[in-house]
Length: 376
Image (cartoon, rainbow, N blue to C red; front, side, top):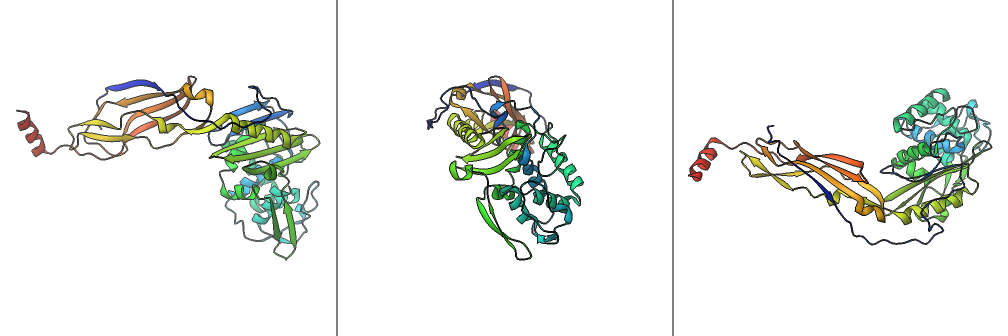
């Protein structure tokens, strides 16, 4: 496609006017204190870190490990509802247990509820055996998925989180992993369940009550996982969804983990709101077409971009456009015609191409002759 390389380059700063609902809580100051050894509060769609403390320190994470165990199993492609037999290897695992018996039959889906609600260590081994055709291979799957997600400072040595050399994560990585997992509807449904009655394929009934107290005390809570070992201390990954924004909170080695997490989550929703920044684009809706059967062509972007902002950050958003002034026919729908970039305090947040939205054919011979005559 031939184009004139006449470019319109301009910047556009837009002042949003919104009304904010305030939330009264203990955080009335700008800085954030937290009793956790490490902490990360993240908006899950943009992955923006809202608050942090030692967020890249490698630490043991106890049973929050099971977030990766669960999402690896769910996305493995193995049938979640096909019964299988519990092996001897999955029986008698130390720590919190479903008290699985060798030879009884379960489905992966039911074990996942036991894994995430009451933190069954034996369930984690049974899941690993089933999905990975062996726990060792399943752990390799967990580590591979962690790297794919971007959790490059995480390494798993087991499926349950019991203390073991070389088994660690960071508050940031665990927030990334959780944000990824919450995109999966099955995972989200399981971790947000407060209690459930599960019957194995042999008729035995078990009752699972979620250990995450925030599901009962914080508005919009949707999970995610508790944990404790001697080395890791008390750990909690929690998540809350309100008004279309999901916030993930990770506290590692934190005595009052529920109280600290609840305060951090309330602060996040008091300080930030999620905005679709693409609603404020201000580039031309049409550009001229040379030698085309239409005089103009509609142009547009294809994506939305949502980002959490504080009230005092709104007027710092800057849009930079680069758009062709004209285009020469023929034009095909989807031709690249420019680019938009969004900045906050000179930091690039998002960029996207601008495209033509329709096909336009070149003028025919008769129309060109008519144009010449009309020009006389």
